[in-house]
Length: 350
Image 1 (cartoon, rainbow, N blue to C red):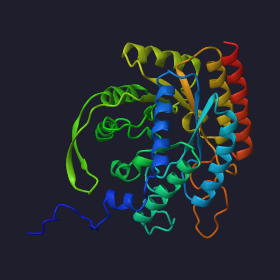
Image 2 (cartoon, one colour):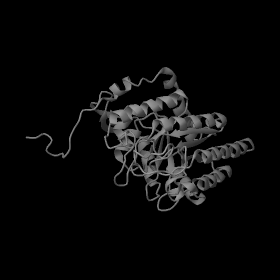
Image 3 (cartoon, rainbow, N blue to C red):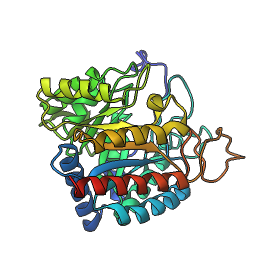
Image 4 (tube, rainbow, N blue to C red):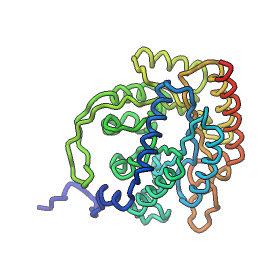
């Protein structure tokens, strides 16, 4: 009997997490950096630190050289604002698709359907290590739970997307992590999937996963209370004051004492028009400046140049997103300085 008779697929051997990580050593300095970043972020999202998070970067990573250039720009400005604004670079190596399409740098780093995932993982880790070298925290979206075994040690913050916030296996894995995590509201705009995910994440679970040697193991998690809600809109935007006040009441009714809100200024909050991100950003900032201390962060999709381009490997323009449109660096710089000056003045005169 064919032992594979239930599956219409091919199988290929793949290196273990230990093998990959042994070729991408996390040096002591970077280990200390990642521990510090996670602690800092956890203190901010639990409202124990008056800094604001700014999660800023391209919709998805597709070119490491471009990403290094962008990260250097972001690091330079972060040094100017880090007494009040804590910047995390958005480093999304996986891309959830509504139907089909390019699934991200880890899945297909060559952008040509060759699916060299070993190369994708190695290059992703190299870039995350570079960010640790320049002391810039990173944030990823966790899509394929197995990928986290390979790149998780190099990551400062994790987002769980709107399509996976209700996934049981994602909730279980998040409960086993020493990494701060944000859960997006569901695609219809409801935050109850986020609330239930956070409740689940707080608690211990028993589930199957792979270990460092790539062997299936029974995992007993200890729970993770370093969590936040991410508002990304739904059938309509959900960043308005009345939405935020409703969500704060829900947070309090559920006794989620460590939970805060991050507003994603893109996606459905911008009506999927990248040019609206600045308007959303300023509206939410005014809410913060009016005393709303549950909002502890903002997220923008930003890159070197504004807009996006279709994926054509022979005609790609430098510095332009190949997935969702982003604001360009000049506007990003203006947004960050505006945020810094207004928020700093608010804290100093509070």
